[in-house]
Image 1 (cartoon, rainbow over the protein chains, first blue to last red):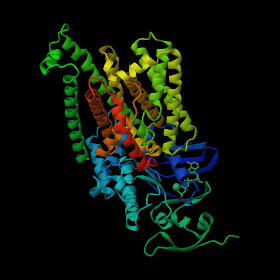
Image 2 (image 1 turned 90 degrees about the vertical axis):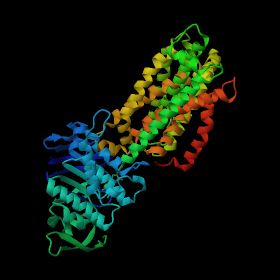
Image 3 (image 1 turned 120 degrees about the vertical axis):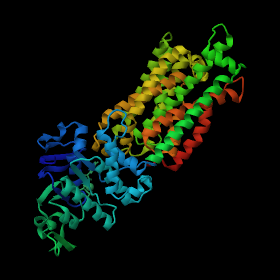
Length: 263
Length: 333
Ligand SMILES: Nc1ncnc2c1ncn2[C@@H]1O[C@H](COP(=O)(O)OP(=O)(O)OP(=O)(O)O)[C@@H](O)[C@H]1O
Ligand SMILES: [Mg+2]
């Protein structure tokens, strides 16, 4: 699962149009990353794809069927979303929170099956939270909290993972850890991943496709090599960037950058 | 999760033992001096010609069952509302549902005095529903009311408005006495006839609440998270509202508008077991019942032979608790 075709999609909040007729494709089994300045509409686009927001015009098709036509629970078995921010109620342990990732699979009064429990344990292990499993989420650090919510999305056990800035709040090591985990899920299990990232070097290192947005429009899309160019970054972020190919690796990195002079 | 489950089971056991003890005390001890043996006899070998048997069977037992129902219903509806509105201060009293139910009860007594009991109860449901609708409309006109006190403000306005109108109607129609009698009597004048309706309705309401617990908690994590996990959010909101209206209507029909219970009990449970409604709701039902049975018993014992309304006892404990909560931050959950 995981071929998305997004065609002429327009999304609005009340009367303000945020995304203007955007079209692109997300390929199954690939990692696609949205980049762009604050407020350009990354989260809005992500929410529309995950069907958290209705679209004003256009179509979003997942594997040949419009996402609006999927029954809600069925979609939740295909696609998990980690929103940019979440509410944490008091006094909930990590394992309780993660157990809610199994919601789409539960019926009736919903006691956890052996499979549910196995997935919960797995998700907690993968996010390195085992020692915190019985601790309360609202008493964890920002990064640990973020990992708990990622674990909840993993427990959902979906072919498609959509994550809005999964590395916010995380220190450098944990950022890498999460991205490596996503890479592993992608490479070993063929999961399709769509995310928004602010760190261009992470985006370049981990993505198959990068997608640059600005003011609700698509600037360009392509492989990291195609995207990490002076022109595209200047156009997207209004920065003057120094790009290099990482030594011994095949992905480009942004070495340093300056703000572009405004005319 | 294992520790939590153990604690949950422990709390359930304690609650059950507590409730059984409280029920037994309430049935055995009362204004009329009746021995324990007589109580047993009244239950297991009922003799309708025995006056003491009559008291046990037709006064004391219905009364404690009524107290249980009220306690469980109000506590559970409070827990549901707090999660669904993501507002720690939500409660059927503060949001005006109680006042709505009481208002419609006044209407039914004023204009349809010969209505059977189930008719009056239906009016109560209607009234609770009316308030719920009003609150819903007013608060969603302005979608971005992240400020929990606003909902409470609207609820208080609705409460004051509806109780004032109730008073005016009651005065004009001269039913003030009847209504006051109904409320002050509290649990005292519950009959089996009424319980025959109320018990199954409460059962349905509580089962519904336990069924919804998972979804309701998910909603308290935020609408986006809930939707992302495949929840039909409007459906869950609607179903929860119906259960809340049912439970609130039942309680008001029995004892009139009681505030603070729905606030106090779920918050106490959350302190004990965390915010997961799968655990909070069953415990709220149990301990809510226990607290009202105790308050009702206390009300009878405080100044015999007069009865102190148990609502007053609960308010005296509940208001300081409420103030403590508002101080601790109604601003965010
Ligand atoms: N709920 C909302 N109601 C109205 N406008 C909104 C809402 N959420 C976002 N917006 C507006 O939509 C635009 C795009 O926001 P969005 O959150 O999609 O940006 P983003 O690219 O994710 O930014 P960031 O990098 O800061 O996360 C912004 O101008 C924002 O003000
Ligand atoms: Mg964003």
